[in-house]
Length: 342
Image (cartoon, rainbow, N blue to C red; front, side):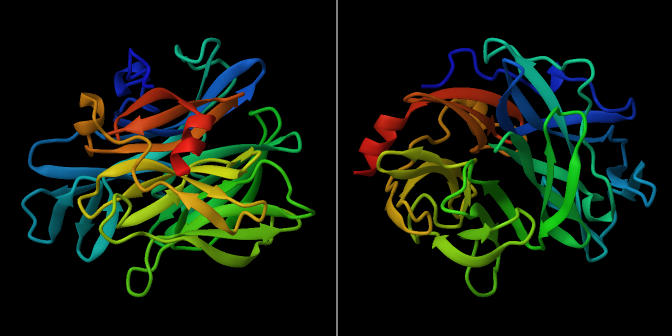
C-alpha cells in the first residue's frame, strides 16, 4: 500500500551542496534504524545551473573538488539522447553528480537532516563522477554501506562501514567494473558472509543477479549466477537486488527490481532456499509497478526502484525512488508476497 501523501521528499526539500549547484533528483535511499529513529541515506543528484547555448556538468578533480565542464550545446560531437548520460567526443559523462545525504525521522514519514551528520561525497578518482544507490546492512553491530562508484574507469562497487555515522572505514573497491546493485546479507550463513551483486556483460550474457561469499568481508569469491532476465516478461532487460534479503520460515525473501526493453522499472520478489544461491520461486508479475503520477513522469519516468526497507514483523516498510526524481514510501506484507510466489 502506497503512503497516501507520497512523495515524502522532493528535490526542493533539500539545499544543494553548494550555491553553484542545483538538485535535480532524489533517488533510491538506503534505509536503517539508528538512535531510535528511521534514517534514509539518500542519493542526491546535482548539476550546475544551465546557461543558454551550453551544456554543463560536474566532475571531481584530482583534489576531490567539484569542477564544471562546459560544452557548446550546438557541438556536433555532443549526444544528449539519454537524459542521464552525456556523450562528448567519444567519452561518456553523467548529466548529474551524486552524493549521499543522511536524513532521519521519528515517525517514518517526516524526514529532516540532523546537525553533526554530514553528507558523504566521492573521495578519489574511482568516484570522480559521483557515488550512487547505497544499500545499508546492519551486520554484527556494524553498518556496512555498499554503493556504486562511478568514474571514467567504469561503474564499480565500493564499501564503507561505520558504527556511529560520523567516522567511516573505507574498504575501497570490493568489486571492479562493470558492477552495481550490491547488497550484503544481514547475518552469516554458516561461517560465511554473502553478497548479491550485478555484473554486466552486454556482448555475451546480460544484467543478471549473482551471489558471492567471503570469510572476512574484504575478499569475495565463489561467484555464482542466481537469476537471469526473462525474455518477454516485465524483467526482460535487466534485474538487480534491492537490499538485504529477509529471512523467513520458507527461505530468504528478496525484493528486486526489473526493467523491460522500454526501461520500465518494476519490483518483484524471489524466494531462495536456506542455500541462498538456489531460487525456489520468482514473481511472474510485479508486486509493484509504476502507476501513480509521480512514478510515471519525472526526470526519468515509468520507474520504481528500491534499495532500502525496514521489516517490522509481517510489515515491510519500503522506501523507494519514483521516476528518478522523488522519494516515496509503501508498506508491503511478507505473508502476501510469499503467497504471491506460490
